[in-house]
Length: 89
Image (cartoon, rainbow, N blue to C red):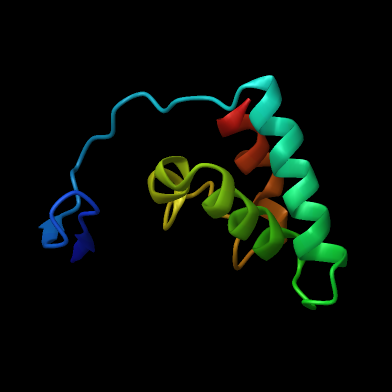
């Protein structure tokens, strides 16, 4: 299974290990929550987890790519929101 490599635009194998992930700054958390509100309450009819992942994509695409398709990805499962928050905090 491959993934899109944003630097080259090519498909590269997903690494078995992952480097330590960056955390959101205080300013980024504020922006994430503002964007989450726009996504969740803005008439887009998204579940909370979808709105969080979409907001993260807008605020920090690099972190979105690190979280996507992991046990902390809450896009399809709102019960993973707490894992998502812990990972970014």
